[in-house]
Amino acid sequence: MRKTLAALSVFALALPAFAQDQVRIGVEGNYPPFSQVSPDGTLSGFDIDIANAVCAQMKADCTLVQQEWDGMIPALAANKFDMIVASMTITDERKKVVDFSDPYYDVPSRFIAAEGAFGGYSPEELAGKTIIVLRNSPRAQYLEATYPDSRILAVDREPAVYLELAAGRGDIAFGSSVVSAEAFLKQPEGEGFEQVGETLTLTDSVDGGVGIAMRKGDEALKTRVNEALAAIMQDGSYAKMAAQYFDFDITPPHARK
Amino acid sequence: MIDWTIVREMLPAFWHGLQMTLLLLVTSAVAGLLLSVPLSVARSARSPWARWPVFGFTFVIRGTPLLVQLFILYYGLPQFGVIRNSTLWPLLRDPWFCAWAAFTLNTTAYTTEIFAGAIRTTPAGEIEAARAMGLTRAQVFRDVFWPGAWRRALPQYGNEIIQLMHATALASTVTIVEILRVGRDVYTNYLKIPESFGMAAVFYLGLTLVLAGLFRLLERHFLRHLDPRASATPMPEPVKASAHA
Image: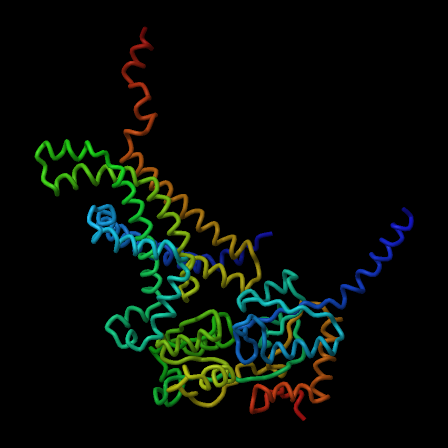
């Protein structure tokens, strides 16, 4: 009996240490080439690679949890996972509810439409037109504030932005310059479409870009993640991973040499 | 525990969502009712040429999830250039029309089967008696056949409409901002369950109460002969008389 108790208490003591190295990561799967689900159900993409690399660097035992974009932060708050690696742009609003790591990439936004349909993207030119955008995203807020005379079709997944554009439900789409280029324009469905105007950076704060989100006050994890991110950027594995997906530099400004 | 400032702030949005839900419900329920009356007659007709196509339609619609039907209409059809260039495109381009069409098709299929079942249980004697009195076919349908079938179908039809109201939540998947979509937005922006899905649930419960009450009134009107209280309650006069004695 005493032995059992002793064994139990040892087990109980060991539990917290054991739990520390169990890290559950929320990922998305609807944001190619950052995250996508292949037909056989496996997750892949730049976000997934970053998640795995950070895990390996932290020597943590990681589980990837797939979660719809809409419920990402709520699921983190509800303790369904410990951090979010899902191309989440760092914004002031989100910073009120989660803590962010240092940015791990930075990609501007861009308009995209049928070839020759638009010369520019000023609010006057897009007045009365339907703009397609991802719901509850910084881009959607930007459109609402900057394009009050346009109709906005807010869809709930980034690929749906381009699906709807190709289907003709809107006149012009506003999305990630990388997602629209890699996952749409380079695909057969993207034929006859082009990016309109130059790229736009919506966040003007110094730590703009995309970060890993964690519950507020999870300082220990934040430090480990930031160290891991710095390490993979330094040893060249970040550049190697990025080169698999992009033919341009997506390193966040703060980490560029 | 409930943050009332969020509730108050989001009330106008929920109000708009409620209007959208009601609009979807009423328009698809009315269209479904109009379509299912002739279809249910065809469904219970003797001729296989009338019966089988309608059975095929209700079998396919009732055999597949409504969400799949909605996605086929909304995402599937625009993939064909023929459809994008057709005169129907201005309609199919509109998310609202796609949702309305999916809900209408769905409720038409279920309502057709409900009515067809009620028609099949029409006592043959009623029709024979009506014919014997020299009523025309149209008169038999209007005055004998349909009123009876409608009364038998009413309780089930009420359930179907309440289920249709709950099904309108699926419209939130195709960019339509109805009650559930407002709830999801509140959830995403404030991360609070009672103020988001809880509020949505309250609105749906309220709608269900209203619909159930409406159908209770309809049943009281049309099914008076089946209400035990209506026939068992003593008339006022005898009560008065016994009080005097």
